[in-house]
Length: 228
Image (cartoon, rainbow, N blue to C red; front, top):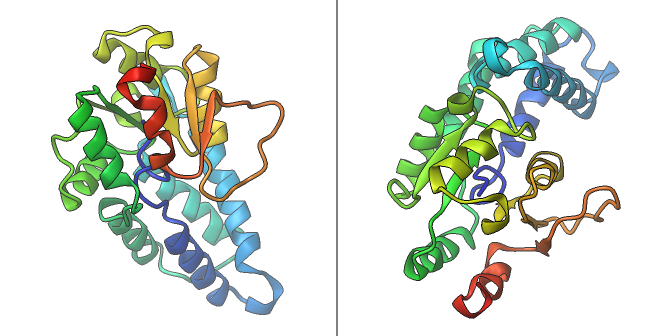
């Protein structure tokens, strides 16, 4: 199961605020939009994540720092790098939980279903977020990018999760909100995947999840004992 975006909200609002601050501190704020800054930042972020595995692994915080520094240079912004990063890092440890997450996790616990979080985040931030929402100990296993020294959609994290659970790809269900990371990564290993499509996005023909729901609670019938 994915964590950010699936159980808790992504840092979209914080990112938008950071991009606006970068714009306002640029030489000519009217010449650039926060959306342009966001797109450039995301492209830098993705490039770093794509190269960060094995000996070349970088933590999520290191990627955040390096990519945002590149943004400030690109747009010649005088925004304070450390202050911007502090806001983002603080959110990672205290994200807003999706309202359907707690009932869903309660159902999994009551049903006795083993659960493993597979998240593109540093372990300390994941554990802080779980502690913030009282979720510590609610999962059978945790696998972070930091543990596997790689990021989804690469196979290492999914492989680690299968090893910890002692199960084959066809015996588990991965749940996530990202087509590129969760659906693509799990499908490549033959793992059935449930796509949480909260924004009701159009499903691309090249990435077809096994199941789709607009909320986690939409998967309860699928996970009921009679369906297992």
